[in-house]
Each structure stands twice: as C-alpha cells, then as structure tokens.
Image 1 (spheres, rainbow, N blue to C red):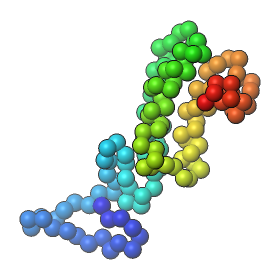
Image 2: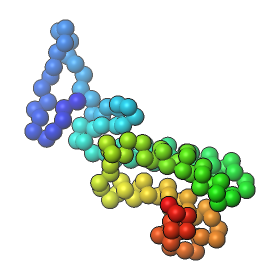
Image 3: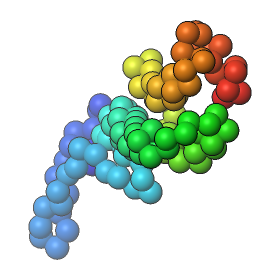
Image 4: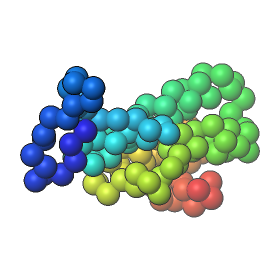
Length: 126
C-alpha cells in the first residue's frame, strides 16, 4: 500500500517477484485505506451493528425497555465502538451514519417516538 499524496508508488520486488499493491488493508478488524479515510470502516461498523439491531428487533417479542437497553449495550454498541480511538470518524457523513443506528434504536419505544432525538437519548440515558 502506498500512503500519502506525494508517494511516487514505486514497485517493490522480493525474490525477483513484484510485490502487489493494495488499496486497503484490514488489520485487527480495522480497515486502513491508502488515503487514510475511515469511511469504509464506518460502513462496515454500521453494517455489523445494523445486523445485530435487526436480530434483536426480530427476536424479541416483548419489548421491555430494560431488556432492550441491555441487549443494545451488549450487542450493538460494541460493533460501533470497536477500536474507535484508532479510527474515530471526523467527517459529518461518517458520524451521521454511525449515529443512525442509535436513532433507529430510540424509535423502537412507542412512548418515545413523538419526542425529539436528544430527548429520547436523555430518557434512555444513552
């Protein structure tokens, strides 16, 4: 992988064979792209968290607030927060994508749907 805008992208050889270049690499579950943007990581975290959220939504018939909060905090949020200090999103579109899961979760409660998003977060203590 050639990092940086001023990198000339030289070809490297090992044992007489050219080493392949990569556009992105995944290490310890974090996607690193050649331009060091975290959009791919945000999309992957959103997809994993969305799958877990869907599993909870389909599996739980009696939607008790405490049970749902416990499941959300133990199954969904870890997908969004895994190594967040290493790939912390800084573009608004990436932050909004990650935040969308929590917005969907707060709308699961019928008594909170009419409230604004920030008020729902306060009621759920998220």
